[in-house]
Length: 454
Ligand SMILES: [Zn+2]
Ligand SMILES: [Zn+2]
Image (cartoon, rainbow, N blue to C red; front, side):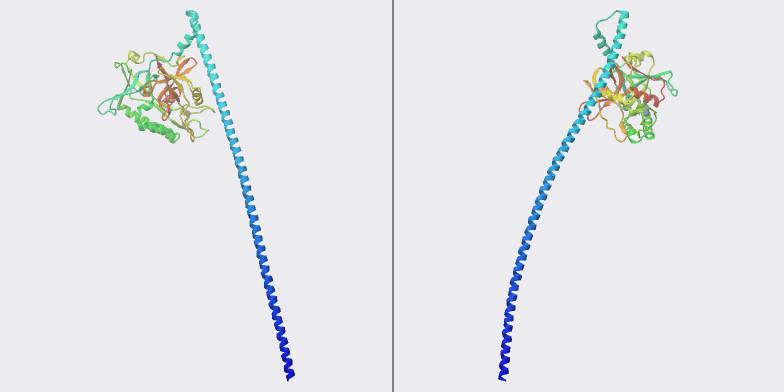
């Protein structure tokens, strides 16, 4: 037993020892593994850190590069934009220069043309005068006198003034008012529906708006702006009816400012045309009122501004008439004839040339005004000019505007007012040749002839 016990004990010891060794070994192993693992982890962390750092650096570099690129690009863009802008400005300057040049060329052409015409007229006039002189007194050497004397053909006579006054106690008029100048008269066949007992009727001319109330004036000016055709006709018809009623409540007469002894009454019936705006619906129908047929490029009298009224004179005899209108001059006569304008562009070219004008002996200059056209609505063509005058503006309403043509002045417009909101006073006038055409066709006037006075 003792042997057996000994052996077991020994075996046990051996087992213990072995186990201890194994435990030791395992411990060491674990320790080693731990160390190894720690080392590995550390390594990994370091590697990761390095990697991250690398990445950050790379990203920073990338960002820097991108920023640099962006900067370069934007600099390039700026440079390009600068260049483009420069080019654009240059182009614009070139364009406006060439426009100015072509405009100047146009003006020069017109000037040359006008100059040639003037020379022709002057030469022709001079030749005629010389022929006349040859036939009577022989040749006069003083050519200058002939030229200046023909420049003095503008009548000094300003024409009688139109007054409005009270008829009775219930009169629509409350006081005697001086309305306007009437520097022109027209003679026409007496309309058949009137009770006038002469074949011909003499009318005095004045701007139509002086017969209107403020409301009628505004409405009349707006009329053509609202709608084309019927509407326009309806508005002007309404105003015509109302004004006819008003005229019956007032009295109108003409007299000279200087004398009180001669007055000539005006009949209480007026014919008038009034137009500020016109509407051109499309290229196919060029006439704003759809009434005129015309060739391509032509214009009609409906494209011109109008503000004209004629009132028949109620006179007893020629003596009475001659006191007010001393020397009627048919403006169909050469030298005093009405200067006809039948195209809007013709009127514009006269303004571009800044042609000289005379009104009641005062010197003036045509000045081009740009009336804006919008959506087919346009301001009626009219005369605009400055005047070197020392009289109140109102004094010129109704006065004749004379245009310098060659070496003479010819009547071509009637002053209707002044433009608003301009730094210098700009007078406005209607083109008489077109205004009278309008009147003639609207009222079927036959044998109409205008007369200026001297
Ligand atoms: Zn008309
Ligand atoms: Zn027309």
